[in-house]
Image 1 (cartoon, helix red, strand yellow):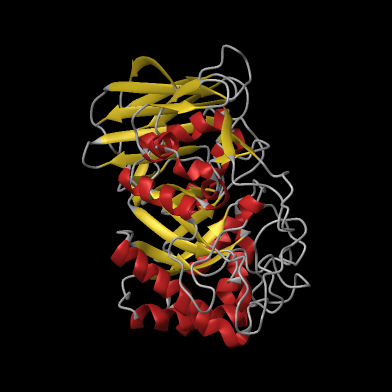
Image 2: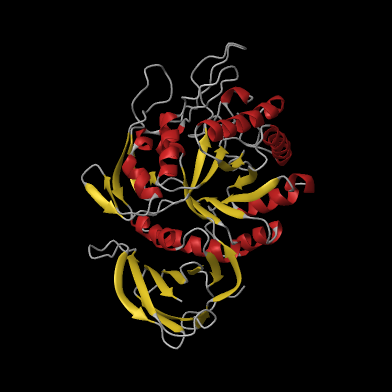
Length: 477
């Protein structure tokens, strides 16, 4: 597929439109800390109103992101000894406490009070407007694994879930799904039993939970899970798979699944850690699974605070992968991996010999990419129709109810002028509302700033963009 060079007219075409399901985030580590109990974070991430967010130095008023998709991390850790077998969980020497997620079932007893912080944020997200929920597993519970270590097997290329526990693993997922529906008012639309299962990185010395699954093991778990969900009255809950790290891995996994297993999968999840600007892997995945199969880009992150790389990745995903949902990994994280900078205690030594660190956490600052993501999440809402924009740097969406066209475009170069042909959508000119974020670190940088209105002319819109900016344009039809 050939991109048009800058300066040519880009035609906004509704012919191959598809329906957008939303934007989201994973809970996991940040929500496992005391940040999971904070009302201001729930309001700013999942609501649309402006919110004053407490940071270590001051309060900062931020536009609400309105994220509607929430991915809940089913935990793998308990610190009690199992009576049968006299086993205890083995902890990786590299893991820290906030990356250990508590589990509800130790094989003998259910503890529905486990994982209180992450569950608190899940319910707060729902109360602030989130409406699409997925539960995913990074590792089966430690006691189901071969070595008792939820960070992975002794060798990264080996599966860690015992074959004898595949049914038990599926039973756990179904039981938590039903309990969440019946007791907590959370309906998981989907469950994902794997997390980057083809990677060889998940081993006993990893710094987080993880588990390798061969394709054959994935097939067995998917079949078990479908039976368990159906048997627990959860036929409406779809199975997502396989949350591979790279688009190319997702292609290989899907091609390896036999048709009966494919028929059990309701959506393909994939992570966005490919850094190649070449769209071939995204195109290959979409062609492999077919146009009818829903896809989510279910996890994205990088350690760049300005958000420009993220915006370009969103554009490529939408143009070539055509996902229905797009999810960031951790909204509050350190080392510029978050939308908000997080400060965590990963150093306090545990006197009992367990993983060091505590569940303390704070917001230390706001990265520019928070404002960059706001351009997309605030203006392209669930049920919008995603249109062909003519270029990967622009996402075009039509709100059919409000009769409003949105263009969000990322400019990673110098000043430029782009003209959009809107003739297939409008008959006359109209007002254009504009917001801009500068991804530079200048003290005069604009952060989701409303600019003066402009106007369309002769059913075209010409936009002058300064260097390294994200621009949102709203046109009433």
